[in-house]
Image 1 (tube, one colour):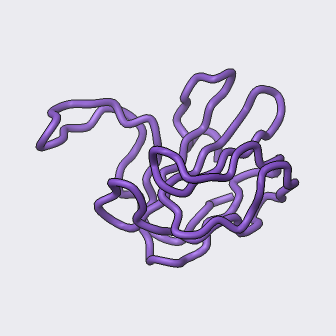
Image 2 (cartoon, helix red, strand yellow):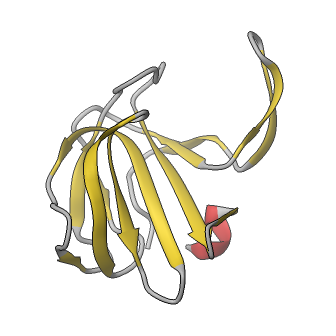
Length: 121
């Protein structure tokens, strides 16, 4: 399930940054319009829904030690403990924290290890 309308701004892996040089980006950034819906990539239970170091965000537990994290949202529409279905709108896209553009930062973890989100979609 594709989680947001928009285009990939940054992929998973190493990238060259003007300020910090080469660094590893453990997420898929999808650029879009402010306020556009962000959907659940897969069904699961919302584990965390709060403001964190990447602005408004949430974590969904998909069981079997698989979690997905979504950050930089302008508004959260789900709460911790809520069961969500694949494709369900969970938040609105934003530019919170230090984000330079409106986007969703999407990460997938298997047994607490970051994996390429494209392999999970």
